[in-house]
Amino acid sequence: MMNEPIRQHMTTNVITLKPDSTLGEARDILLKKRIHHIPIVENKMLVGMVTSWDLFKLGKAADDYQSMKVSEIMTTKIATLEPDQHLGAVADVLTRHLFHAVPIVNDKRELLGIVTSTDIIRYEHSKEYPENLDKFVHENMV
Image (cartoon, rainbow, N blue to C red; front, side, top):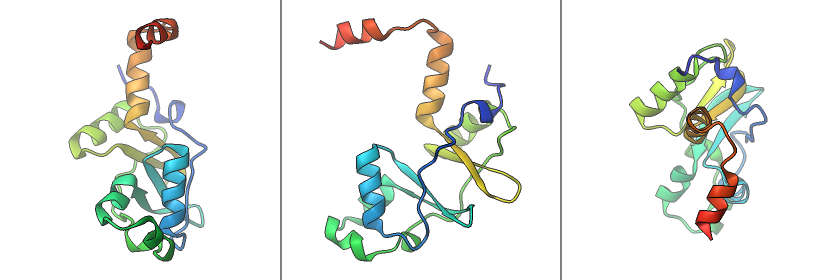
């Protein structure tokens, strides 16, 4: 069922930061873009990941993040997949490890995209409910 290549479903316009970016920059992006994961990239290569949970668990005031570097808290051991693997591999990584995003890289570890748990839900939902249900959602939310 999830045999389609990851490349067909991954987000390729990924918001990234560098290791020397501040946690303040990361916090601003997470809040403004309403995302939960920021891959950390150096010379196109994935070197880490920072999540909204990483910032939350620090328990610091917003001002404290301005002087801290992303490299101080980023996760460096990251599960990755390649774009030609099947979408089911993403679902497997997400469910086995309780992650919510999987960066997609090439054999040089260059970041090509990302697939999130929301992408998987969206994929499965569109398979189950292929017609546009927007009008029903709107009617039921008012």
